Length: 270
View 1 (tube, helix red, strand yellow):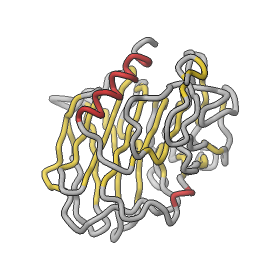
View 2 (cartoon, rainbow, N blue to C red):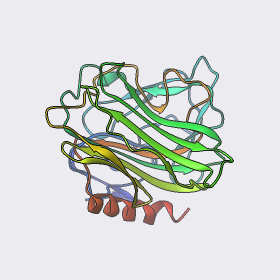
View 3 (cartoon, rainbow, N blue to C red):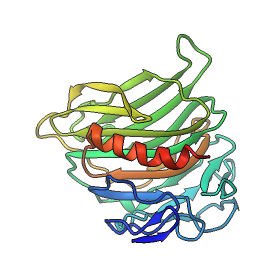
View 4 (tube, one colour):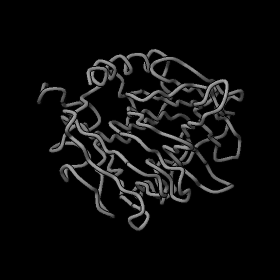
């Protein structure tokens, strides 16, 4: 049912929000959408976010997050001047949004996917965009956009993941230009399969180790960030964030292509 332009009443508790309702939504467990200043995950209006501000999970699962701006050392802003809102940062000093509500939840996963719609904006050095750090004996996940003046490709994307039992099944560092502008990024992992990383609709990297039988992922740790990190100053994401989604299953190439085409039709118009 059409609610408003670019906003739909979707499945899994989704509400009508600025970036709408993409084709693939199976197993959606966390959903942040900043496209609407009145229905989105942040409704505090244009300007600087305050320490402790809440971002609302729109999936219906209740995984809200809380801003820790590193005692004011990293500024986060809401900006709706482009027609649909984004959360953006202008510096990189250890601030992050903490998924407190994941504490003790999402145990024993045998598949998951992370999906991002973001705008790169004069990024440099490390840009950690998500970290679930459960310690040395628990599931750990980190993704990083690295922008340097190196050769042959100055930009790299990494996706590192370790199962609860300690097996590393990430993709590692992949040379991939991340030019200024809008992008779609997906990481997907499934029991028995190799992890795959997609950038703007195409697979750009595949892990060398399949997710072993009998091993799982536990995303149950409080104090983990999805926008920046909890413990790495000067390595936080610097750019504009539009959409962030987590699924409790692996996405196929077709699933990724469908959602990329949907979002591309929206953010390609900016």
